[in-house]
Structure formats: C-alpha cells, structure tokens
Amino acid sequence: MTQEAVRSDAGSRLSGGYWRLWWATGISSVGDGAFTAAVPLLAVTVTRDPRLVSVVSAATFLPWLLLSLPAGALVDRYDRVALMWRAQAIQALIVGVIAVLAAFGRIGIPTLAVTAFGLGACTVVFANAAQAVLPDIVAKPLLHKANGHQQAITTIGLQFAGPPVGGLLFATAAASPFGVNAASFTLSAVLLVTLPRRRHPRTGHPPMRAAIVDGLRWLARHRLLRTLALLLAVNTFCWQLGNVSLVLLATQALRLDAPGYGLLLAGAALGSLLGGLISARLVQRMGELSALLAALITNVVIFVGIGLSPNMIVLGALLAVNGFVTTLWNIVTVSLRQRIVPSGLLGRVNSVYRMLGWGLIPLGALVGGLVAHLFGLRAPYPVAGALRGIALLVAMPVLIRAMRR
Image 1: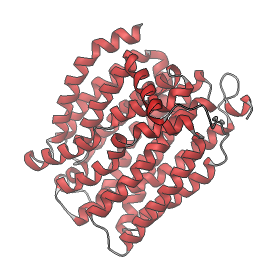
Image 2 (image 1 turned 30 degrees about the horizontal axis):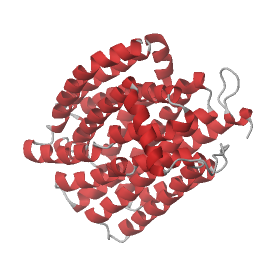
Image 3 (image 1 turned 180 degrees about the vertical axis):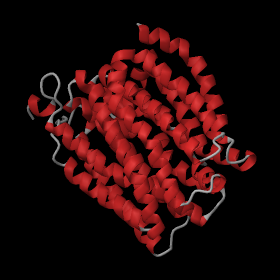
Image 4 (image 1 turned 90 degrees about the vertical axis):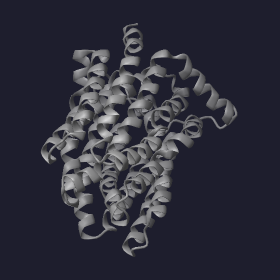
C-alpha cells in the first residue's frame, strides 16, 4: 500500500481510510449503545439483586484481565484490519444469539454472563487493533484531532443515539435492541474490510511469550506511561464500582422507567460528545499536563456528587460533566501512547496498558454490587470518588515531573 493510502493528507486533512474507520466506529457504536441500555434492563427483569446484576458487568470486562496480553501480541503479529472486522463479525453472531434467546424468554443471568464474556473477548482484540491501526492511517500531528473525532462518534453512538433507541426498543420487545446491535456489527465489519492494509511479515516474530514480555518490559521502563496505566487501573476500578449500580439508582431510587433510563444515558453523553469535539483545541491551549490534571480532579468531585443526586436532572448534569472530563483524559493519554510507543510494539504495549487499566473493572463491579447491597444504592459513587482522590494525590508528583520533562 502506498504512503498516501496509509497516512493523512499533508498537514491538516484526514485520509479516506480514516473516515471509513470513523463510519465503521459510529455504526457499531449505535448498536453498542442500544445493547448497553438493554442488558441491565434485561438483567433486572431476571433479578433485582445488585450482586447478580454486577456479575454480568464483571463478565463483560473480565477478558481485559485474562486476554489482553495475548491479544496485543496478535495485533503486532497479524493484519490489524483483518483482526478488527473478524472480531466484529463474531460479535454480530453472539448478539444474534442473545436476541433469539430473549425473544423466546430463555435468557438468564448465567447465559447473559457467558455471552457478555464472549463479546468482551472480541472487544479486547478489536479495541487493541483499532488503537494500534490509527497511527498507520493518520500522521502523528493529527492524532489528537483523529482521536477526538473517534471519541465524538463513539459517544454519539454509544451514549447519545444508542441508549434511547435501546430503551425504547426494549420497552417494545426485549429482543429488538440486540437485533439492532447484531446488524450494526455486521455493517461495521463490511466497512472495515475496505480499509488499507499494512502487511506484517509472516516470519521473524519472536515466540508469543517473548513478544508479550517485550511489551511488559517496555512499559515498565517508561515512567510516565507506567504511572498513567496504574492510575487508570484505580480509576476504572472506581468507575465500575460506582457505575454497576447506576441502573438500580436510576430505576429504583429515582423511579425512572426504561425509556427514561435511556434518555438519562443520552443526556450524560452530551458532555462526552462535547469533549470529543473540542478536546484537541483545549489541549492545545492548556497543555497536556494541565488538561490531564483538570480532568482527574473534576472526576473526583463529580463521583462524590453523583451518589448524592436528588433527582434525574442533577444526576444527568453530573454524568455529563463526568463524560466531558473522561473524554479529555482519554484523548490525551491515547495520543501520548500513539506518539511515544514504536509502531511495532504498539499493540503489545497497549495491551499491557489496558490490561492494567481495565483488568480491575470486574473486581470493581463485584465490589460495587456488595457496597450497594450493604450500604444502599447511593453509597458506591462516593466511595469510588474518595478512592480516586487518594490515588490522584499519590500519582500527581510523578505526573508533574514526568510530563514537564
């Protein structure tokens, strides 16, 4: 493939290959958003026990702990585009099975947990490949812009358009949002097949174990990225600790129905969408360090406030601010990795980073379910906010020194 096909046009324009990736991301995100709203609603029709609801959430993220390292080695070893579209095709099949089971009323918590794990395993491969392929089709000076557009379209689908669709479809027929998700995965896979390829040599790769060790060593030796990965681990643990009971907080404590819950998630997505659209300019004005610290400090305050929300309006506003600053954090840290890590190691380093960053999410889900069960549905978010504040205080001196260098 030519350099013109791989990279963005000179200076300021993003390439056609990038925009096909953007469309594929957007389409699959709409289906994912419908799925995200429908799964907890389906779970609470089976059980009202927050501990059992948390099992489904834990199963979704468990593959990040178990499969991220080998997935990263695969991303550096094989065609990244092929891995992406094949993962989406398998996800379409899995979600289609959920739709059929839901239509016949044969779904239960164990089935939801197993299928959620399968979807999560495909997501690990897809997400690692998607982050690693972006520097192949986008010039480094445009990475903040490209990541911002990716975050914006993901937010539109996953949080803004998809959840209300999922909530409304679920109220009509439990199977319908899962059918929409299966169709979105299929169309995304078709678009991904058309992306330009970067050929990887079939020989000369180190053994799988050695390749994984190379990624581990590289990240362990880079103080800034290592610190960000550990901080992400605490933050995502705390995010899921609070988030796992959000559906119960909304539907039981605040008395929202299924469409209202979808609209709550859509309102919260407005902040994430705004973050995706303006983060690149914000980082340019503030600098990466200031933007990063502002996002982290705001997250701590917001988490405490969410648990104290008296009504849907306050809860939605706090979730919107949280979405904005979380998007800002994501764009800064993803762009840093894409600029700093050598291309041949990017899949493996990303996999280690995200294993550390996302590997504790299942534990966060289980702890959140236990905290909600013991102390009430409002307790998980303030507990998570306090833990995030402690972690930030510990990491802040390292971040300031490393990023100033």
